[in-house]
Length: 400
Image (cartoon, rainbow, N blue to C red; front, side):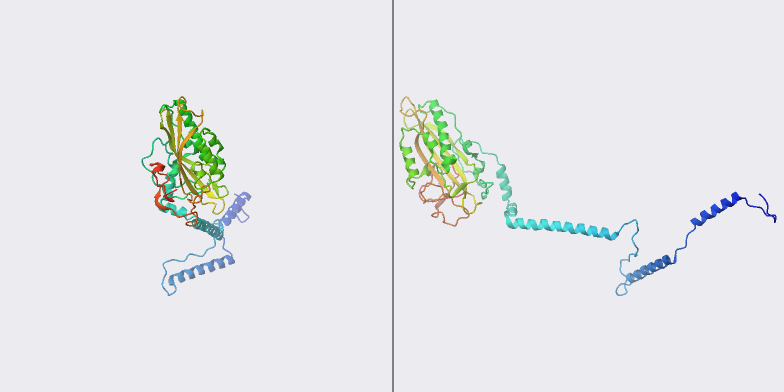
């Protein structure tokens, strides 16, 4: 180390540079005194916080409230704009409430338009309806039933479900419900003759009760072509009934018909249930092919309430005689219609024009003819023959 002129130690340039850097660093780390404006703002905020704290402790009548005042401080720059978060949360809550309100109003409107949706759930009808819709189809009827079909929930039919509330919901559709039994020789009539008669009996039933043209009122040409021309009785009666229909000569005794100007079928399904069997005939060399079937037709009016569905139930009993060709004269491959009888439910009793005229729910009482009388008859009850049912008067159907 060198010495000054007065004898003190001298400082080299390198030591002086290191000293200057150290002083600079310490000066940078030393706390800076806040500006006058910053001190004023801090003091003002402190006084305001103290004043609010004292006011909260005093309360409106000088008593202390249980909730302390929250210091008033500006939001930190890292926390973001608090008012925007509150606004966003408010908008989300308002949208949620609006959505709930819309759903609630829509529910009220649906109940007002279709109150049955709620009523059906409360009364159990909806459950009964679902069980009926899921029920398996009934097996073919092989013998006469010993009991009527059980009661189902009394439900009105609709355009989408025309057989709702009816035992026919479990019945077969159309011609599938007419099953032909296995043929055997009976009463001296050969097996092949009986087999042919059974097959043609089904064709006749289909043509007379399921053919859309015949249902619309056209002449039953196909059905009549199946009958033996040696028997001029049936074709003659049919011709009179179609040309001049009346109560005495009614086409409905053998064929099902509706007036297209009045009615329109709902869908293209007719429910069918019944059976066909063979018995010994009245004379040697004869057998009787017997048929007993019930047909259920849903309709709506062409004019008026287009959603009011009504069902008409037509039951028919027919007997065809089969002959041993070695003993009796008849036309090969043709049917001999020996006997037929109808029973029709839900149609007027006094029109006599050869058409079905069902009553609808929207009809006024008595609008479609005389009021029914007597004990109600279940048109789905097949435990008795038609001949065992009441025959006089206009009877009331217990259900359709």
